[in-house]
Amino acid sequence: MRRRPNHLAGFGSLIWLFVVGLPLYVMLVATFQSRADYAANGPLGLPERFTLDNYVNDLSDGFAQYFLNTVIVTVCVVGIVLLLVPPLAYAIVRSDGKATGRVFRLFLLGLAIPSQAVIVPMFYLINEAGLYDNLIGVILPTAAFAMPVCTLILSGVMRDITSELYEAMTVDGASSWRIFRQLVMPLSKSGLSTVIVFSALQAWNGFLFPLVLTQSSENKVITMGLYDFQTEHGVDMPGLLAAVVLSMLPILLVYLFARRALVQGLMGVGGK
Amino acid sequence: MTTATAPAVDSEKTRRRATRPGRAAGTGVSRPGFVWAAPAAVFFGLFAIVPLLLVVVLSFTSWNGLGSPEFAGLDNWSKLLDDPVMLKSLWLSLLLTVLGVVVQTPISILLGVWAAGHQRNRAVLSAIYFVPLLLSITAVSVLWRAVLDPNFGVPSQARWLFGDGNLFGVQAGAIGVLVFVSTWQFTPLHTLIYQGAARAIPQVLYQAAQIDGAGRFRQFFHITLPQLRNSIVTSMVLMVVGGLTTFDTVLILTQGGPGTDTTNSAYYMYQKAFKSFEFGTASAIALLLVLVASFVSLVMVRLTGYDKMRSTMEGV
Image (cartoon, rainbow over all chains, first blue to last red):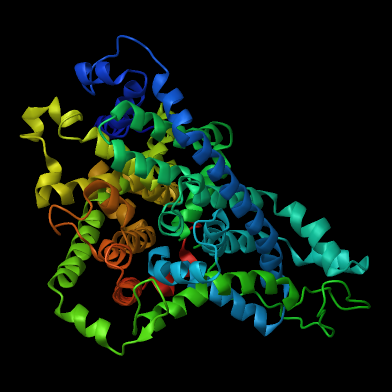
């Protein structure tokens, strides 16, 4: 059955496109102008002279270092999650012990804990552990707070593996470890990529833990770099916005090439 | 949210339980033991559960960040009850949350239902709509702070719309900015929830309605909206929890100002802890916030009967 086009909805969708696009346009255009040109043209004006100076200046003013720090944090968080969550999800789905059930409920409870709520005790613990102003001190809590959603995603995927497959492997005399390696992991690939993307996003975009657990500029991650740039030289709009673009670049690249995994990873955020 | 059920325990109990990952000789199905869950459990316990318990303990202590916390009984709590800024901050948290729900829900339902259709350009537009959700809250807040800057931003060029242009100087303007920026960033998430749910509505319902002569608006209000009920609850619970704990946007966009006019509870907690170094008081605020957020989401889930219809929920 063919429906006639809904012009009202079409119009509404264009308005939203404008709302979403306007700040992104202002941002991009501003970053390619010098400060003086930006002041003269205004945020909505068209640029006359194209320059990459803002990006170059940002990178030499520390953003290269912040970028590297953020990469380190992200890689480590993803590593920890990949090391701990798959065995946990496997145990949750396949174990018949009571203890595993309790662990799973603990993680469900974890879904409901906002990171803001634990920031004071986290500051206390990280200080006591001597990890204040150390990237490790950011990595550990960030990984822990990414785990509940990852566990839900992965155990959901693993639950779809039929018990016939497990039984077939058992008949062959396979141990839990071999089942995990040869059956569970290969069949959980889609879940694993979602988990990787979700935890990487959490780490890359994380702000609260770095804000209260780090201090010095050699341990700054990129979100902290943005925040400090804004509070220190907030009037340098093109420089500031170029830094914003730099912070988004890797995510936008992933979005271009791995959209599906990214969208699913973000729906994981929704589960939070 | 997909599989929030108790772990599946196979009906057929195995005779032999594999306590170590390595061995499960003989007939029984090899099952992973607790060892497989232990590392994750220990790690998560240490960095999430222990802090949560510690926040309760710290809320009964006095600690300035140096030395060790000292027991202070109910001091923090009685101080908070008398603190006008605290009460105001709770009220502001609720206001921001309610405004967020009221503004975001209609927009994301409409966009979600639209995106579930098959129009031309739909895929391209959806891909663009999605971009704000990819960005960090920090980047989005810094971006909007720059775009709305009274001197260098869009308001300086659009006086007809923004008046004197300083949105951040008055309470209504500052609250408006906070609600708007959250809407800009999080609408795609809720749109996605509604899009999935709208796709799952059986086409037969619309065909039947069309035969009965129901127009587009009646179809929307009598078929689409009722069918989206579960998703509306899911999306609202997310909005409420997110709204009550809004922090980054407040810190970057308004710093709680003008005055304390946008100091919500999460921001007040941060100020108490890391600006005035009253970590005990801050812990009490944090605990209060967790309690309020859990209470509100529980009430929402109960009132809507959502807990009883989990099985009909489309995979969100």
